[in-house]
Image (cartoon, rainbow over all chains, first blue to last red; front, side, top):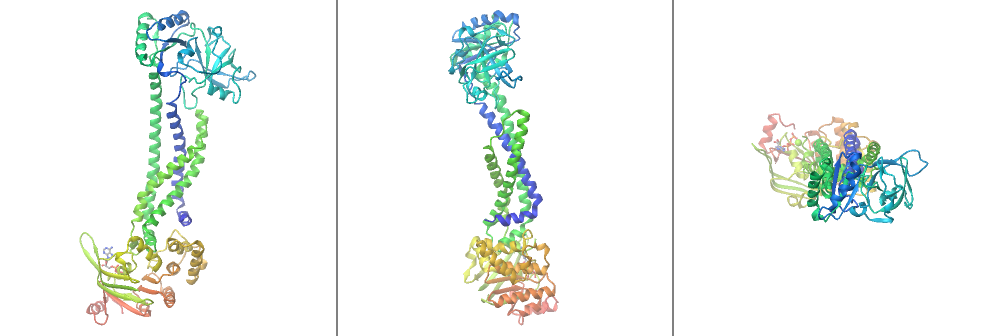
Length: 401
Length: 238
Ligand SMILES: Nc1ncnc2c1ncn2[C@@H]1O[C@H](COP(=O)(O)OP(=O)(O)OP(=O)(O)O)[C@@H](O)[C@H]1O
Ligand SMILES: [Mg+2]
């Protein structure tokens, strides 16, 4: 109700108003983007893998050479299967939350000369789908004759499975079955769609861009073994498996960071994400604190500067509440101005981040949240000075301090 | 209209207690024009701030328009200041951030008046003080006399029944002072009660009644020995 005269009075303090509004604008831009990154990271730590995390134990070997691999693959699969409580074993090139072994560029249009898109290609033997607990949503599983030996880093096969969500991004609105995927000199066709298959290193904006190809254990396919067990047996089976490898296979080296019950690999993987998120929350908090201090500082200065004028207002009829509201509305307007500019800045910043880190553009619904947080922050920060202003007695009007 | 009996006001600091007013008695009737004179530090401003509900008092009673004001809470006091009282200060006390129009509007907004009525009243009172053409000027762009006229317009806009003026011409030259005084007389003729503190005996003489304050008390000039002592010491001009 007093907006017009408050704006009129602010015209006399353009510089300070402008500076504080700009501070708010910057805070708004950083806040919205940082909030987005944090939320995406937190959301990521709850990512669904599509596999039975608690029923899987991963064994990863480091530095397996081709000569060794030819019979190491089948032999280890056999030995791991015979460990008590192991329900099934899959040989693969990678495990969720382990190193990415099959990242490759590909095309889906045979006429496109450039490999524009990247995804992770899992290689799995005949036990892969069953051991991991994958679910098929359309098409079919691989047939026995489709499993092929690895040549280079992919099997010389012609069919693959794709994650459902990723398929809908690659071929929006189309049936992915039968679609071609071209990598180097190989052409795969989609024969089935699985409900979900997380990539080894899911990131906030790329969690399931993955394919599964049918490969035979042996050369190029002897590094990763996934064991299916009852959840409560995972730790025990892992201990037995490592003991067996140390005893029977002195020439291989266990990759400790990518071996263990999958739930443990998962926790280790997200410990990083969590500390990153905590750090960003810290940055956000520091930013908000600085903005709040700026507001407190300016408001306190203005209250001091306008003591006489507050006394005059009180003398000619303002109640304490009127004075309190004056400073609150003033703050609301300044922060509001900052927020409007800040929303534009938020998108500029988001566009830059998009270019640098290939992040998607900031979703619009972060803007009202950012605005709300800053408005509340502003009101909180101005409350102290505004209350001090409201406490200025009307007699100040007559006694020129 | 305004009646104080045995009123006292004590200012306490850590070291001293100052009796700014003691056993202060005054009775101003509706429609009167009273000039308050007295030496510096005698308590004139203190009297006006209490009369105008800007400050509370220590002892005695004060009835304003028949209401015992010590019983009122802060909001009620604000409302009375807003609706019944107009203030004119020596230092004009305009709000420097607002132009003339907005300055006059301030008390009307606190009254919650509708925009159309506000505008009409503002223009009327600015015309009254001869400054309608300066509505968009800021206080800093006006002479002292003009600023005081704006302050009077602000006090008048709310049609107060009681006008309190603390040395309204104290910062003005004789010419401007005369103009302001004429304005006050005109307002008085229209029915307002005016209490004006002044050091200027010429202006005081134009009021209907003079009240003299010495050492925080109203005194009868002819009888009070303190007054004669002050005159002899050269501290009071007659
Ligand atoms: N806030 C205060 N704290 C302490 N003493 C005060 C305060 N305000 C006024 N006084 C004292 O009260 C007494 C009366 O002051 P007051 O301002 O009413 O005098 P005055 O008659 O208006 O003087 P002048 O003509 O100089 O304006 C003075 O002694 C003054 O020092
Ligand atoms: Mg005084």
